[in-house]
Length: 349
Image (cartoon, rainbow, N blue to C red; front, side, top):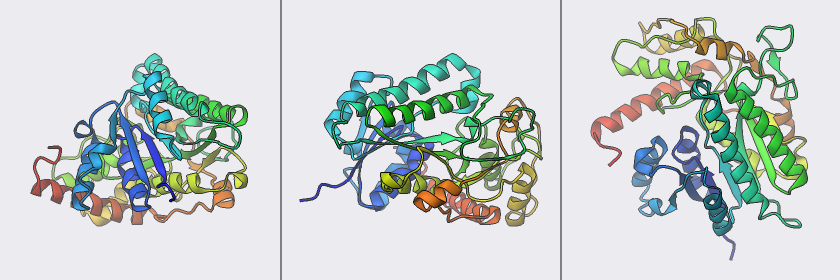
């Protein structure tokens, strides 16, 4: 009898996992979820509770393990117990918080990453290559020498980050590739642009866009936008991003020409273009721009990505491929979420 594919997710309570987990379930996989907090104390856990209730999955809490990824023996024991077919490592400190405490950012992001790699290395033997999927970021790039940030980042462009978050991304890309070549771990990664879904902004420097959408449906005075109207980076609908992670995981290793791939959805919009896209759906919506230090982080990133290697090697294609299409989808998601919350004032219970 064929065993159900086991997908182990570290950082199960986070923003990416809240969309990844339902997609894995719908594809017939068995998720095993690890987070340092219990589900009711995380955004991802609360979303999973609602999803499980709607689909009559009463045993979903048995999937969840409370585990701090800094606990190396605990990570190793869990991986040896589960023997996952694929491991999604999603836990990390985000960019804005990393700039507040660079030392903590390095210790947390790199320790979490190394603990998972080392545990998977212990499973590697002969033809057995345990698979690890990890999201990198546009923050791995920085301004090119003698250049502004206004360029399209080729997949192999120099990675010269100007943020500590970006430094940990470059270090992890390099370390994961090393473990793939030397220690039998089938490491795979995508560099993600800014991600948009109906989760509350969580401390990323690209959250200015998500904030606009929340303000548009919030019925209150919009909060100041922490970048200026000309700020420009690529964005992607979260559902496309998690689908990319799953599709990369499912690809034949022999067809992959590299370990880390750029992916994108459409040409990068400016903050003002996002504002105008929302205003076409929410008449009268306006943004008050009050840039702070996060403007510098965004300005250090490229305007756009070249994702042709992902298209060539594993057929990457976004489903939401225009700014206005993304705006319509995201506003629908947020309004549906507000409606659900109004019917159930205690969704975390």
